[in-house]
Image (cartoon, rainbow, N blue to C red):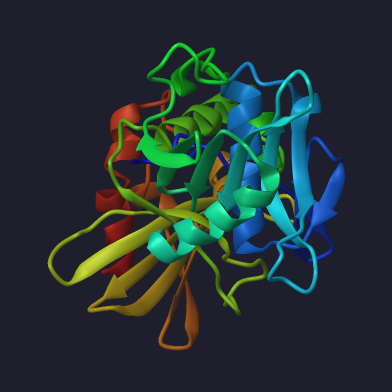
Amino acid sequence: MKSIANRHFPRFICNGNESVLFNPILKKRFKNRPEERVRLKWVEYLAYQTDWPKSRIGFEAPVTLHQAKNALRADLILYNRNMSPEILIECKAESVRLNSTVAEQAARYNQAVGAPYICLTNGVSDFWYRVEDGTVTEFKPNTTPDFPFKETRPISEIHRDYDYWSKRGFCAGQFSDSNEEILQKSITHFWSDSIDWQMNYLNFSSSPFSFGLQQYYRIPVIDNEQKLAISFIGTPAETTNLVAILNIKGENHAVLSINLNQLSEGHTDSARLFHAGEVQTRNTGKLLPFFENRFSSKRIEQLPHYLMRFFD
């Protein structure tokens, strides 16, 4: 089933030119690793959408297995009121396919943990299991009255303001009140279920610009040969950039970055296109009416159409 934490994002903190993950419960920083991102997506889901207390979330609890030389660590354990394990959540990278081998690993962990519920997740899909009288059966969460936690509100009712998106690395810098509202509503709609584009975290070892390109992206398909990866990126230099990567026949062809801070101030030459080893300036004002009038959900849904103009 689709992960119930799918629409949540981990928090980031800029550490020089590097972004590190921030755990809001432990108040600690962690390296930006795939499994850690998934684990923190789950922390966000539990904090914002459920009634599960933060005080009963355990991180990397030691698990001793008879066949292991050293103690292993379970990603997340949710404890009940008696501080006994209630749910074991085993987190894998989003790129890891969940299969029987991964499920068997989680089951071995739970032999030592003893939780009546197991969730196997990669942040995209979840597999849930109930353990009862030594029998493990698959089931769907939130479908029975005795399930350990309840969703207190749908994700659409979470107030995601500018500060919320800033803490997750999607925006930065100063905007006028009206333009900040347009940007905040645009990012919120961009990541909503109203748009069905694929979502992936893309990690790049280099960037043609002064900031890194690693971030969660949405990937709309343009045609049989072309697709775009689109995201908003807040940088250490306090700028918000709308980034689009054009992929043709499986190869990244060009990268576009639009400085939304400059665009909001009326600078029409706020776009940079990297192609064939060169960075070129593009006139944004005529091609992307991002801050015109007020927020428009249709404008965000038509972003691929607007952004493809820059690659012509």
